[in-house]
Length: 395
Length: 228
Ligand SMILES: Nc1ncnc2c1ncn2[C@@H]1O[C@H](COP(=O)(O)OP(=O)(O)OP(=O)(O)O)[C@@H](O)[C@H]1O
Ligand SMILES: [Mg+2]
Image (cartoon, rainbow over all chains, first blue to last red; front, side):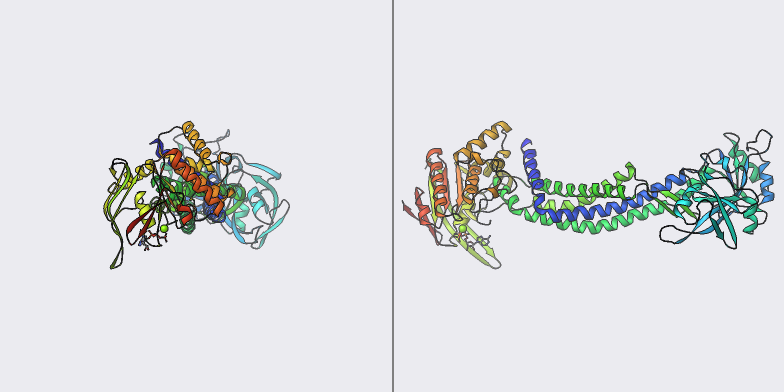
């Protein structure tokens, strides 16, 4: 047994030391695997970043009421102001010192904007809000300028919107349809989708976007642990209300789910590219085994078995793959980690988020690389193991 | 014939090529005593290399028996034959067949990796083998940093490091100039005389054959002996 390990050791050392003699082929394998892993990580980083932002949004202590049939999206939801008056009198809603329920009726519309990079048009969200809205977003701060003045065409823009889109800088005038708005402040709610929105006064948005006396959603500060169930029971029992109630956290968690498709898509792309890289890796490995045939056959003549040859080839393949994986992860980290992008959210407006490569994404990348290395190595390694014993005169 | 290291009895070898069968020997008989140094000569295609492969357990006869040190080898399993080679035969190839990425010392050590020897003992034996071939100063050199003659000497050190009874060489000087060839042949002679190694060497060169104790001519499946 000790002898087998020594034989394996000797062949592995020989293989590793012979790598420089196949420099270009080895480098090609490393680069092609790095490309596959880099691509995979781009998707995983995007999915991870989006998930962090969307799932990081929303609180357990806030209930969100949407119109029935909105399929959970604020953009599709509408309910009359009369419903708001009924709901805010319901149970489970916290009240302030004066006994007034703490709620925030909000209207949510999509408006056109132009990306800073590339100039493409995209929809962002304009949210019409009243006084309680800011207090219901933990972490909300005005970083530049001031809050909009109620009753005016003023808006405040989220920091993500300012970064990614043109025309939202402090003091800028911006047109949505026939109306001109003034950006009077920039706000932040770090790590949440609210950062990707612009906010203005609710009645002004209702009027200028012809919403009449309707809102998209009502947010309510919940009074205690069972408040959400009480509120749900209350709205269900009232036939005048065509609404559904969830906690804000649940609401955003279901939106984040819609991006799982992107991650699956990323894996599909990476595995497809991986098949290409695999063809290259197989080629390289067959050539490497071929190049060592005489050495392996000589070892067989001396009395070595086939097993060390197998391990030698396998080690080479796994090393190249590991190299490709590490390069791919490192490149992805340097190129995309933390870059700020916006993409469609489930509700068809832009969500601004950061690419995020964490340990889970890096491990996925390295594992895929090793799987490619294993598959690319196994057949050449079996071939190496079957190298026939060298015959004298057949050198 | 208790003194025989190798006994070839009625050995036949034929190759099948499609429908035809090419018979190289039909009934070959030969006895090689312990401590012999045989040079095998003969026309091209007469089967010299084929015979050497069978003696070394790299190929099997189609018929007959090969006995080594009283033990029949032609019917051993692949893996038994592999261990038998490791323990009993050292090969010296025309083109050296060294591992290009390993140093001279690591090349010489290879057969010892198949034994139970610890690393200290292995190093000692490698050192001794390299001293015998006069290359201890070059032990850390890679093959491409050595001349052809030096590479062949490393190959000889590798062949003898595990202390096999039999050394087999096919045209060991075929790729070397006259002076270097002489050095190699003198070395083989020394291994035969001083260390008692039994050597079977195939060569085309009558001058090389003179270094052996006896010359055998293989032609048309038969041996003809000429004592030198
Ligand atoms: N694997 C093989 N398959 C078929 N025929 C073979 C094989 N190996 C050798 N032969 C044939 O066997 C015969 C003897 O070959 P061998 O190599 O033993 O000759 P040799 O005496 O060593 O010749 P040379 O002096 O040219 O080296 C040749 O006719 C050769 O073509
Ligand atoms: Mg020959």
